[in-house]
Length: 359
Image (cartoon, rainbow, N blue to C red; front, side, top):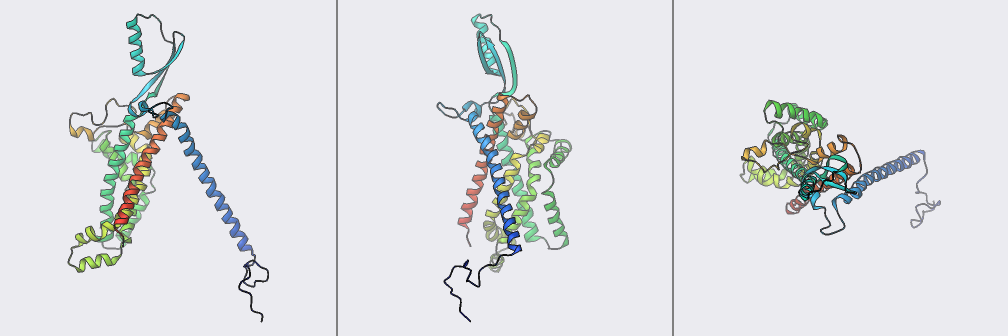
């Protein structure tokens, strides 16, 4: 028998080991092609959506002259936009500027009146209170979710007697992850706003959002704890450490990168939810900023403005035109940048902890 030449091409017809065409391989190639096309379509759709927000939002957020950023949009509260003609000039003024303009014209002795006045709510001014409220809601709810979620994960993985009851709890946690956000909003409204009497407030919003993201935090934290080798625990216990000292010194530091991964997933969900905060924490408009309170307790039991709710109101509750579109896309771009900044901070902290605690 002739020995095959091992240096010949795998596709050479003289190579006895070359792949033979078959119906299964054709099916595999076709399915692979469909999966590749579907992946590219999804990526292109996502790029189109993000690109539209970036391009249209940049027209609102940035400007051609110094300081190149629309400071008014980032530092003032939403206002009503007044559009009118005055002495042959078309003018567009926010509510405060409009009132100052009328007072100055009256003081000047002018008898001219605005002609064809049109008022569009929330289409002037800025979104500074919305930015503050969004950051407070995200940071506060994630702090509560991490404390409760990590504590639950430690108990389930390190202390609980493994059995049917613990498995049932894990299954219940997984099922809660699929509950629609509006259901959590109704739960928070009934539990925190009405039953506990917290009313529409930061505290009610924090706990509602925290409970909504809690299943993700518990599941990811427990998986991170399971990933730490059993030998770390055994070595610590053999040296005389208590159970809690072992968890705190030999387990948690190595599980923290995985736990922070859950916080990144939680931030992405918490920041974009409208229904829960609409029921529990958000106002359409609020005159004062959260820290403008007489008592410290009032800070926690007051409602706030938030970017997702603002986008919802401007997009659905008022007539649509080029002025509302400018606010919508500008707000959406700022919202994406804030979420990206918070998530990036978590990623950098996770990577730092991962480098510091290698095994």
